[in-house]
Image (cartoon, rainbow over all chains, first blue to last red; front, side, top):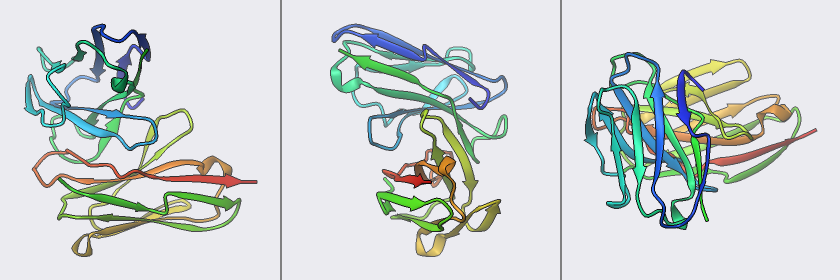
Length: 116
Length: 110
């Protein structure tokens, strides 16, 4: 959706396993955001990248969560020692205009993570 | 952080009816968006409306930033309007870190 590819679309894993979720935005977008949406809730902010660096990671719930964007395009959200409470849809988002850090946000279709 | 309250939490409409959804937020913001999340989970942008009024077909939105609220109007509702409507204010930090409310779940029945 909206020019961003998120993979996998669905991931089922067992408690304690390691998971990687990938966001591949259309080229030229400096800013990239990760959100997650638990069942029945609105999306909540996790982390914001400006280029390759994490400008704001205040939403990461704990140190099991980590995200990278080494070349300033594709981003990977990494979750270690998954817990059942990590089950959610993980959403990637970017601003409307390439290169801008503000303005309207567009969201991908998300990666649905289920931890058994 | 910003606190966002949306009302009503649930709404059932007969097809063709009109409705108003409200969003109150606790702090000054530089932007505000309304989204519709369809039954497949996709977040669809409806309005980017930090202030003023905008209209798009049967939908319109008004934000009164000084009084920290925004309204979304749906006229002549259709079954395809069903889903969850989210208000997301933000941007006070100079970038687009928006905060979502819990949403209004709308069901339009034929």
